[in-house]
Length: 256
Image (tube, rainbow, N blue to C red; front, side, top):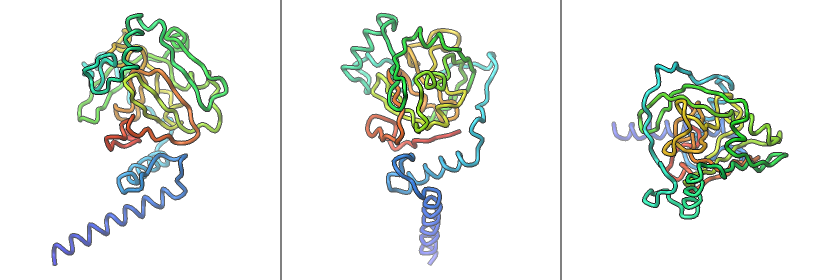
């Protein structure tokens, strides 16, 4: 009898969560983050919509002083040109090595999609935008955290320069290590979301994503994609499938 009661209680909890998620997810479409038709993805959306509903859009992640800076390990892909890394893509790897050998003088960041002025920016172009420097905590999904100083241009300035359209909803990031991930427009236009080209007072190191990475300070570390080469703005959610963190069952939105 006791085991039957436990099973019944578990079913009731699961049903209740599904019902709650269904209420919040009513009207979801391809303009919303994914549910994938299962309870786990419904829980992801429940978290996403609750945070968007309850938290101020411009609330800032905590910023620290220079004496708080710690060492920060480089994990995941540390060199897209290294054929021994699991993320290696021959075409991207060869191109990245050529750009790296040329000190990224020929590297460009393309901005395309739902913008009125598609653009291509060199590293020096981005450095001519008004810069922002912030010292923030990188919180990793593996359970560790570290504090570093990041310098770059706020993503919103680059999107505005490209003429972001009012219908735009998501910003997709493409990287040399074949990673693809995205954020919504709330995070894209947040003042602390950076396209970072500097770290701890120096040029961004290769192991940490040179020449450019995104910093999404209000989400866990794996949303801060390294080795950027293209940004595509879209009106609908694009499922990155096997190219992004979702392939491992990770949440699309992991706000902190």
